[in-house]
Image (cartoon, rainbow, N blue to C red; front, side):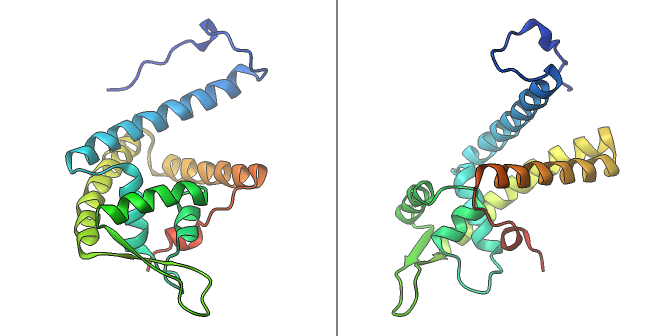
Amino acid sequence: MPVESRDMSVLTYDIKLPLHHLRFWFVLRQAHGMMQDRLERRLKKVGSTPEIAMALWILTSWKGETPCTPAELGRCLSREPQSIAGALNRMTKEGLVKRIPKKKGKAYTEIKMTDKGKVVAAVTRAALNDTLKEIHEALLNRSGPAMVRELGSDLETLRDVMVETLGIEIETRECTRRE
């Protein structure tokens, strides 16, 4: 059921941007929040979280020339190294991943999924797939394939502007590459 559009002119802001700019950010945040909430509820049913599900998805899909490292996982998740360390600690404690210490002559620690991690990854990937498919199909039905492609392109542009403007180090090529 579509969410009824509200007249945002009834709200007051101390941010000095044109109303259509504020509306863009407000609606983007609402959409993200609703998608995140839907995903959290689905993943909670299988005993996981979006953070763990996305990390396992990346590790399952990793096609890099070298094994995945904590820094690379952080870049794929658009996260700072210190915040990914906490997630890796939880995943290690739950037996989903192993951290392979630096080997002589290597400057990094590798992350490997355990057998348990592979099972959990399959379950969480199914929940992610179901959620994304549900949203994508609803968007396709409402807006059509051309609009969905354009929206994807616009969101990539927004992400790239954010990366450049904020100086965030992320990796998109290795994280989203398909065979």
